[in-house]
Length: 300
Length: 276
Image 1 (tube, helix red, strand yellow):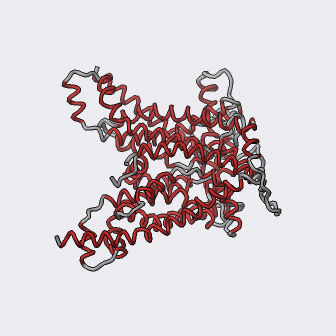
Image 2 (cartoon, chains in turn red, orange; image 1 turned 135 degrees about the vertical axis):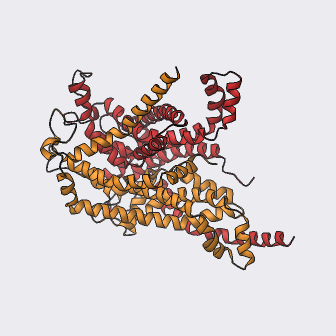
Image 3 (tube, rainbow over the protein chains, first blue to last red; image 1 turned 180 degrees about the horizontal axis):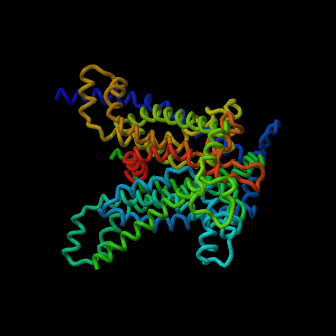
């Protein structure tokens, strides 16, 4: 009785303190997140130009109309979708295979799990430069191996300077760097599946494939869903690897490199802001799905 | 049959290990090569003779050293700041029942996905008008946009799992919410703080877009930007051995962190993405 009352006094004190605890963090995010976001919306309706001392003029929806008519922007959308679809699909299939492999007990498992973290922790800029060097058309190890030593290629390829091939090379780098992340997420999901279910399935005479179909896949579904959305959101924002490897040339321009180019290289703050808003809306749609899947409402 | 399957698994694992680690071997191989042996065909698969010349050149390059120092300052600053702000917010969201909690929690989770590119121009304007452009503070403050939501989300999960009786006992002793937070809850949350600190540090150490946009010269340029811009006297003679030596040096602290804290990292990664 006494204890319950103290508990409720504590609860009241905490309820009062809650917003004080939250205030510094919320203020910081308002300054570097909310305010710039609102400012981006405002800029997108003006002809603001970087370094222009004159006040920006209102241009209404002109930038949005121009964007939708701009072939380069449409190509950036297309490239981003191709990149996201291909890299996430490959990362998922490879990641699932690796997770299933690592879910078993074997010597050296701890080593493998550590080794998988290293590409993930590597700066993307470093990964991109390293792979650009390996893909180098004259002195790169990829051409040396595939053409000079093994003769699998009739002639050396300009991997990062050929339309089509450049995008494939960028996807390969992303798959190399991010598959471990996908595998570790799926592995965490696999380890939540009770072992008894597999034993029961075995007693019933289920084959390995049937166990996979009847036990693993359905129970792994939440983890798969979260991992896919998480990675898709990441892939839609791709910038670093493309900017370092090709600077968006040879059919590799993404939404982010397009927006960066307009804003920082061409100084078109207003036009870049309109592109930013469209990127934001696309990501927001996926984020809404993500938050819904995670169901954060824990007040129930 | 069983032996065959076992051999297959071993082979797959060996392939996987090769695939993961071969590029690192290549970085080290190139970094140890003599400048005149880097750009030649056929390619050398082992440096002959191996030399530390590339490392000597890079470590003698004041621009590179300055960039590493800037990176350490920026990452350290952003990590400490997001931990300080994030621990308080995470505690409130993880332990206190108050109206609007679910909404604020959703907001933080949604913001972990915030696309940095979508506020690039506006942040550039903000950073310029506040006089922060080309200073470490420009990056420390804008990095909060990525590190803080994640820190709050992971720490709120962490605080929620601490036993309820702890703070009640302290409260009976007359301590207010702040004292309970500071003296009782925060020390218990140390493992969660370590996890989020490591992830925030890695994240900011590797950041490229804002570092590229909000700095102009060596006074604030970070290591990823320096490595991306590393070129030789002319475009034809790119010093790949130096670039790879710099890459290895910038990656070493991260490899060390991974080796020391891999358990923390995996639990943090999965807390950010899997736990609801």
